[in-house]
Image (cartoon, rainbow, N blue to C red; front, top):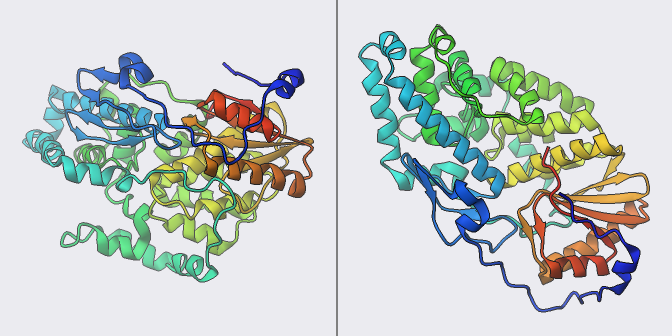
Length: 424
């Protein structure tokens, strides 16, 4: 459902808010009010109050498998799906089919999952990399030193392969391999074809950053190395969005190096500089699946200056920021089906697309309120879009909601505002 400020008479009647207007306080949000029945379940509950300080709601998700914090509604959806996958894996591990294949290891696998989740502090640190609040800057991105990009991209294919063969260093919890091959590459360890098959049956990311699920998938992959168990176990698979399903067919079905080659070929077609592409492949915040989703969405549209969005994405600090860049690109892919996306505004942390004479800023966030920082960045977006993209009109499309005060302020800056835009 879209709430569109489309009537020029209405816009003229609204009183623009000055950029120096008093900061709008964050909304008061409860889990039940925001999530309804999803706030609690047989294996989880979302703790009140829900932090609504930034652009994303921050959820304290308590589960039978430990704490699983999430920043943003889309990330909460991922965590709840992962929780359901863990519950199903736990049930399968106790079944007769799995017991025959695993022998005495079936109890050991169950305990290995439990041993991880009994450390909720460690689990919380592992999920999302210690969540940082997102949203400091939605305007022009800070220039990254060329030396930093070059240093981030210096790992050779030989070093990456050697690190993957060595596996995580048990003395350092994987830091040795991470240093040689990057955080994303480190997530590939132990994810064999059987583990990917189980991830596909469950509709989850085989390269998940959730340490509990990652360990469970590796354990199942070891027992089911021949691939015989997965075919014998029927599981209810949750519905998967079409875009995610397209990417899933690749990350579930192909080995990591094959997926990487596809991504590299598409990045070259998008004219992404090799040093930028290599930095993305190695970046700690980027799982192989997130990399694939980003490149696939950009490649499907091929707008002018697509490479600039990859360069911006490399700077993501943590999974939430990486997901922001992915969801922005997927919003553009959805937009392109409605109206062709011709070019992007370069050097910017908000994805701004030129379509005809309109510049459309895409924000995959939960809620926008009026603050001095946001107002200044919105004004800069409008000015740059008109100057650099030669746009005569500006739109802001948000996947979540926009406060009434923010709508008034944006109207004063010339923005047409749409809420509830699809993420894919």
